[in-house]
Image 1 (cartoon, one colour):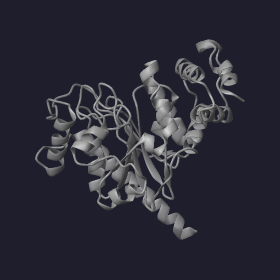
Image 2 (cartoon, one colour):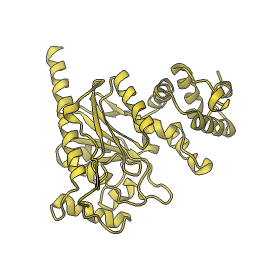
Image 3 (cartoon, helix red, strand yellow):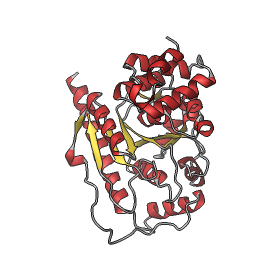
Length: 318
């Protein structure tokens, strides 16, 4: 079935549109990613999905199509996946601090996202100012991990057709299903992964929780900071940890309520160079780390340890 046939289901407005089945969603996304649909059809598809909103079955189908076209990243150890697709505007982008901190704790960290975003400070830019250049060949990932460094892999390297879909935002001006699926992506082969998935709206958070539960996903879900999967340095966000489809309260934390009585010392400028200096100062102990970020790191380290124990138990019983 061609993409235009699927458009007849999803393109009838908020009240008249029909959701795609999982298989139909995978087929529709395959048409887009493989270039079998024209530019007008793809634009109509993105707009229709934006107006209708994605269901869980649709997202799972879209993800299956993207996964099938993603370069595999082999690993023998659990990997923490950090999708970084928004960048920052008002606050410093602290996703690189999170990634470096986790790598320093001995975790294998894979960050993926765009190299640049108009009017935003990307993780790629901050990491570059810290001396960590993007990984352009998948075999370089293991070398970064051996140095206890996070590996930043551009989406265009992991899945070129997905990056092409994401680039439509610059033409249409709106995000589409590709941006949602990018947060769910798992390129790792041979080892469990812990995905950090952020949300900005409660409805999307509930959808991601349903995905983690139904599909038995290992994930840390939180309300992101300007769309980045890092805890807001000013106020502790709610963080939910799902392992094997089960919510783990002992690895989760409630959102901070009430009036803030203390603010962290953050850099006044948010450009990549200023943010990089701040990251270095926190990692070296010259500046105190924001408490919400320290709690996020502790939860992720504990969740990754639980994944490693679960894998070891399975190998012993095999």
